[in-house]
Length: 330
Image 1 (cartoon, rainbow, N blue to C red):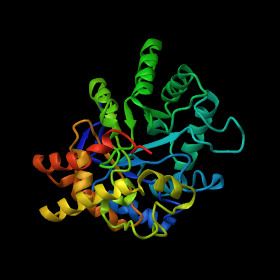
Image 2: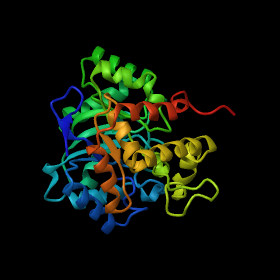
Image 3: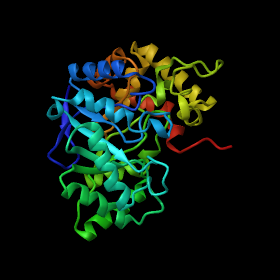
Image 4: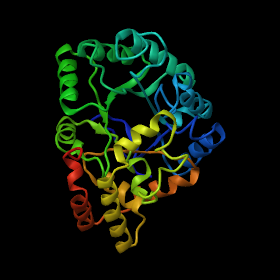
């Protein structure tokens, strides 16, 4: 597994990052640990989690994923680069969400306890909090780094102007600067190309996109004539509706059909083609890949090793061109 520089830091991370949001709901602990074992065996040394995982869980489930990962990491923490996130609701009180100084500092302590470690390598804002001034957010994350509880900080799901604003305020205040962004990015959702990815290239920010397979749509295994299958991202707990809104649409199925046809033409798995397309973008540092079974990782690892032909990339760009502009009208 290739390792690359994480933005303009001195940190090196594996070209694939294992996303853990399936752990604790879609996968039980035994399966989750088997997935982690498989990832480690195949050279994936970068792990991503969050304080609100598992995906699709209810409030009482929040934190279970970190606990599962933490038990697996015992005795091998220093062999991995570990990232987690905060800002979503983690409790019933009104202050138990967002990026207020109170919630950020409470959240990092809770995450470290669940993960069984005294620091994470990367601490990220999971979603932008419109109710907290940007100065308070960046100062809270600066406090986390200065306390030694995180080595670096980043943001997830931030539009370009929010990233630019956070960078600007950190620089003006002379405090810890963001080093990474975690956007949703795949052949069915290319909006980050318009301004976020160019900003990251200019500012030297690492880019660690999630959903490279669009929740499994880009494997070509789903049938538009049938309802979403039970046990998939499209029916999973509280997240199923969100994933259907993202991808379970006629336009998306039409694009997938074109990608599957191209993959068949050149003799490659459409999932390998789709993940390799994400990694082929020069702005991308490491793609976050998930799994619900250990064998699912083989495709992603194959994609990291696959050399995407430039002409094939151009054809994929054209097949998915309308997804660069945003949602379909109406």
